[in-house]
Length: 179
Image (tube, rainbow, N blue to C red; front, side, top):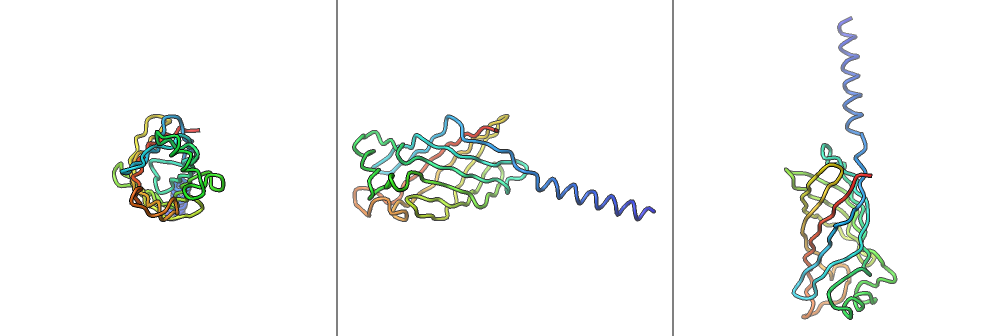
């Protein structure tokens, strides 16, 4: 009888722990206060329109999923002519590819540091990137921050030039709110 009770208890514990591991992460949506900035010798600026979702559970970070998109027409360099030129076929080709997108495939955590691996798609070209980030959770809000480099030539944004550097330093702050 003791063996039967122990077996039932072990099965119940296994089912419970498996169920907890498969519980869905909390659903968040991008909220106001985000910033997507890029910097190089020239040009530098930001993107003003972004949206997307994040599935996040601090206790199970490996289940985290980012699905974000940036409207490339929302570029702001401080120079109206440069903003307009960035939309042409040679650069972002905004008519054909209106969004830059990021969809994570793996997230790992070390302390409060995240390593977010995912597919970055710009101008119809997808490359895998690993993006370092930190996060701060406060109630129903989480803010992710980080900096990484994007090689614009890999995405055929413009062409090699002595005027515009290949590498763009991208800094982000993405606050999300639980929905």
